[in-house]
Image (tube, rainbow, N blue to C red; front, side):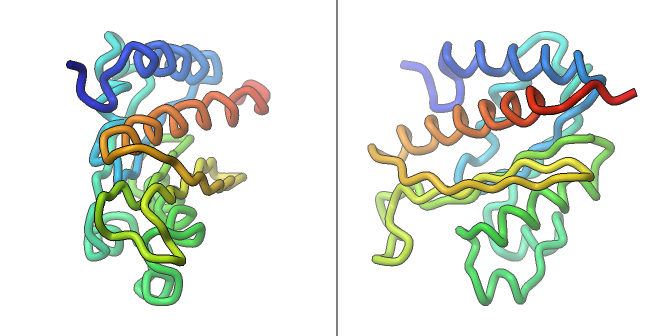
Length: 171
């Protein structure tokens, strides 16, 4: 049985991400919480990914989000780790602490515990950032922990493709 983040669909998406990044002359950085490095694993399974993948941050705890990505303690206190504000700051921090030109971040509640009425299991926030733009979106995913994490990897990768498809080549 394949592990989450390591499926055939992820490989195809990761290859598309790589091709799109190479066409733009860009590199990717990831900032992951609930996926635990699953996005970075998916992209580094692709031979040649060192040409377009800079690094990945796995920031599972709030302290690591603050220390490694510069997420503000006030943001975490006011909005929580699973929020639009936090994933925006995670993506921006990943850009700041890397040499990449595009970042993706993900934070969510994969379950089966940890959910609340306001933030149920399956709520996942994503952000994609360049130096000029940050886009964030929330998804409410279903399934068990592995399914939520695997779907989150796919959404994160597809978001990179979508963001890059809207860009013109950077000289």
